[in-house]
Length: 471
Image (cartoon, rainbow, N blue to C red; front, side, top):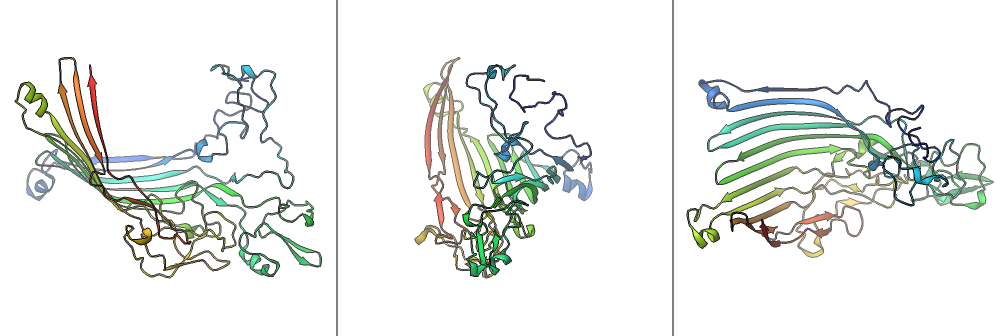
């Protein structure tokens, strides 16, 4: 063994019978990449006017498939080394080349062991499990870009950038409640959050919850114990069931030389998926109902950064030159639409017993946006939304409009002064959100008394001064 002093059950790549990698290498995963570049060389006619002549324009296109791995940190409650789920904490510092030498004589840690045995009723449960049907996540990325050199040392870039994510990691409820069964059991008391109850129908007839898997096969339950006797309740698959699509038009203007340096970029894009992350669960009955704007979607994003060297007093000498020359003003300005508002409902009217799946009903009226500075700090009128009908999931997309946008101006005024040959004094005055625009965030999309309310605002104007002496 690589580490003979390790706890019982710990195995490592290089041990007898242990593969070299945590997951088997999948040699059949083909990941091609292709790219092409072309520079028009026309010297006359309309092509020369359009492309500027030889060496003034480049056209590039490319695409590829990129596989990724599921990292240990993503799973949170699973360890990315064998035996999965076991931990050993050294009581004292360890040797790097022999990390387990100091545990000689200590007991083995407690963890998940094989063969697995079903714990007794009432034991501590786990909230998620890893699906054996998972696939390797990958993305398909493609682009087409045209770059053109313009007069005044300007460079213009215009391009299409897109990607498709497939088999991305998310969570899906593996044991959802049966809404139809709960509706049949309403007279016995079934309702929201009642998926894990035991229902007495009389004449010694019992229904052990509304989930498809509630009781271990062959196990006899004590019907008198009530809630908590069921073996399995809600449990989410850690599943590679998410897909995404991103398409964008990207424009960039750049100037790198001279006293004025400029970089401006505008992106018009749309990102759609059925799950934007590990804690954005998918509808277990119909994954297509979860398809909506991504949580990070920004439809319009304009950012410009700039830097200008003041030409004043460059030739001045003495104290005047040191004080008034060498000043530079720089800044970053951003105008952008906000992030989508996530609509949700937390009352389990769907009778699913699933986390993050319930959404309200929407009557189709246009969303009326309000000024959050007004009474109640409302960003939108919540009247078009209503709670979902009992036993059904609401008809609204969980994200289909955006929250408050961004209007941010950051400035910096700085100057370098040579005090002596070996000493340099740097002064900086920085201002973030210089015009003190109100930047609102976290709009409540839950169908409750706070729906539509802005929960917080980003920082107001912040100014700071810095003086640095280098020698």
